[in-house]
Length: 545
Image: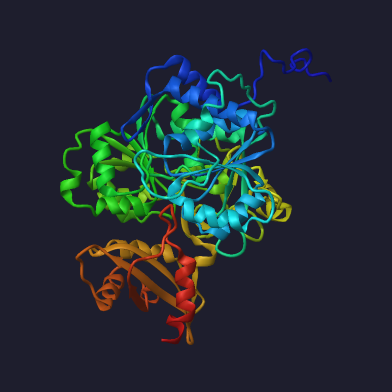
């Protein structure tokens, strides 16, 4: 039987246009040409100026032969030029590869070579690393452009031109077009792997468009919000927020590095309404002097993600007066792809119970099709009993195209038609997902599973603790036992016995850490605690003590 809804009703230029977040900046520049788009120190840009500068960048890149399938890398902090790269680079059909500014030269050299970067836009702050990385490249070297920031002095100029001079090679009215296929790649992001080379995660225009919109819908973000860049734009393309802010005609307030004093000052100076950050960033703010927090008379909304946030962090944000929403995702899911959607009834709960509810990974983002916890062997969904553990899996438009030049890893990641996250979780009776641990972080002691996150949640509730991580320590009798690494607040004092006694009051005895090590915890550039470093320490130094 012929379907009458298909005959003569095909896609055509009038009824179908490829989805791309590039359309967002064109709209905001047209509708709100004089509204402020970006604030970087004393410099300010309007939406028309940001659009024109992005088109100049695209035009200049085109004039240098950059086009579809090429890669343009950016080693930049949160600056106006980094924001413009998210539009100007894909306007040429090229792919933007934002580089983690805290990686070493060997890792950067691998990414430049693996992604075959034709152009590298870099900040002098990172000149030593970039210079060493370029020296390690055996093949063709990319064209290097220096993006100078008036607020930063130092470093070495490595480029053929400055970013501002390079823009002069382009035309502000450059005629660009949306991709013919929304499946075309828009960005390349490398995972922060702990063993072997990182994998190159490829995003497409459709996913970037949908997640940019989902950030607005799932967060309830109003038009013209003022957004502070505490989250690095290199991390999952800033969780797609450069494109989100263009869609919503918001104002970006740039911040080169995370510093609580600067954060609070910028919040007050620019009436910042929204910001994102890992738990460690929020922890730094919570533990800042009260004098820094004074004078904020408006509501600040925050997204928290990264490592699964302890309830104590969410509770601390609420006490500080910030309205915090928990999101969850990975590099492979364009950043956040799940949200702990709040219920009004939770407002009636005591603050500790409310924080525990809000600390769950939650439900799918609006533009994601599915999040489930499935058995790692059978791939069947686990029961909603809050106890049976499985692996979190995603399905939908907010999942990467795959890993660049790595079909084996791509096939493994998509086994059974779902993206496998490697995070172990349970599902509560209301369908909300709650992470229990990474598969490699579960501690098996005497045959009993111990969630390192459960123990860390208790540690964070100790008044002297600012950061904590729990890993397995080899044990002759039990196989392995929990070991805690604890970072104390400034001027705080605490003993191992006090920490252990605190844990005994809240945990079954077999879950209590058998050893506590004090000191600053190793962290990634996005604030995640590097547990693999602590595991190495536990398997070597602690194992023989």
